[in-house]
Length: 266
Image: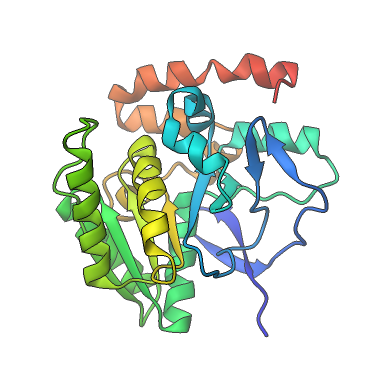
């Protein structure tokens, strides 16, 4: 029987190898339970799980993100560490524990290989139509035999009168494609809200919803992934700003987490 895959960050798509043992005691980053430390994907269960890759921006959003707070309290949550700063902090807090940086930009290739190997179906939901189509083609080349489809969300905003319609549209798309796994690429807060609503409706239909943020955009060529040296140096956010200066304010907001990390307040 093959071992689960550990994802190793490199230039380009990650490559699997035998996973390290799971953590011996539970790890936490503040309110967030770190459930995924090396193996991917999580085991299939009757309940549709929701996979979140945690970085500093998502961690700081918790007080204002009710959907994320609900997921944190839910047994459906599967959470790995994406941000390099958070990974450094947890290595200091849990020096004897195995913990690998598992980011959506790497895991999207891993789930493609997993599905190709098992004859399972993958759906990419989100992103511009052209970017989504290119991501589908990229993953199909990377994982020969993969059954993969892409779909964009025609609309999704925060108005209470629109959200139920958007959720119904998303549910209809998923049911029409009948995937085993769904990668969401709507932006973190929208993904969390959509996943929290849809997961209970997809039990025994879909194994997992994967909140991977910009992974579809990167696989589809809309952005370039930071080189490995920038990733190891914790400079991935700065690299994104270099490509898209409009993200400068977002990066400045994220810097608020650094004093907390320095104090060990996590």
